[in-house]
Image (tube, rainbow, N blue to C red; front, side, top):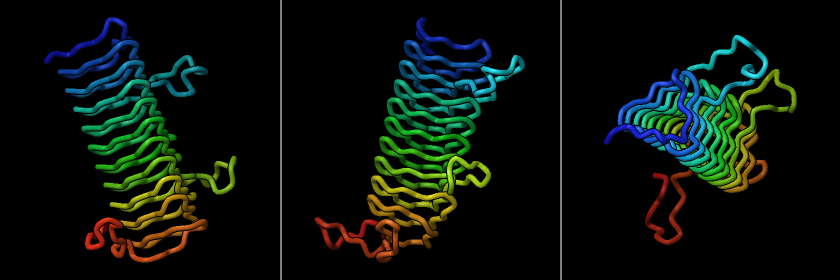
Length: 234
């Protein structure tokens, strides 16, 4: 398979396009974007969206943006300049990834989800639809966020002097509509129940639930409702 670039796409001469890449109608690939081998760039995708300084500075230069090999960017995805998306990345329709966000290998970022810039995400993470990840959030490997869950980065908005998102350990599960408040730290293999608001640090392997969330049990004690002999988080 050879590289296919639609005549209706806009690709900067300062972009680098790998082998076996498909770029569909009305996609835009801006300056200093590298698209790795085997990537698929869907309709109306924007890669390397210019930062705010583009509109005010005559000397603006777009930061480097890297889309690693084997990535799939579905229609309507916007990736701002300065981002790095690891191998095998996948986005849902309308996903937005703001500047200087870094994703590891084999991550998926769902429909209408948004990473609000300067986030650092490990390998194998999954974000379902309508997830919001605030700036300066750190997420380790194999973390799952379920629909409408979110992180926050300012303890007293709109003050920006102490912005810092949560830090989330490996293997943690964030239930639907859960909220993780600024500065909190979650250990490895934590389970956060749906609709919970996490306001304090959570130690490794705990199940927390409620608003504010409290420790209910060890996550290892959770049994499958259909098969009570199965423990999903062992």
